[in-house]
Amino acid sequence: MLNIDMRKIYNFYPIEPAPDAANLPTGGDIYYECADCQVVVNSVPFIKAACACGNLTGGGGNLTVKNPERVRVVRGKLK
Image (tube, rainbow, N blue to C red; front, side, top):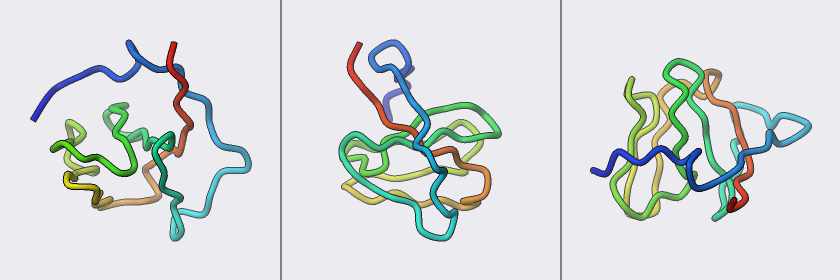
């Protein structure tokens, strides 16, 4: 698993209004920021990805969110 700081590559902007935690959106430019460890993970990670605390884990196009209430949904734009 690569440990890449996505903030060095992308600018992130919160999606407004904030989506419901029970129905989180996905897409190539949609990212989730863990509120506990502040790590940003793509909503459809094709390489193995996880946040430091384990709230967000995934790979192969699927992401598992243990606690959706502790996730902020953001849109990423290349710098």
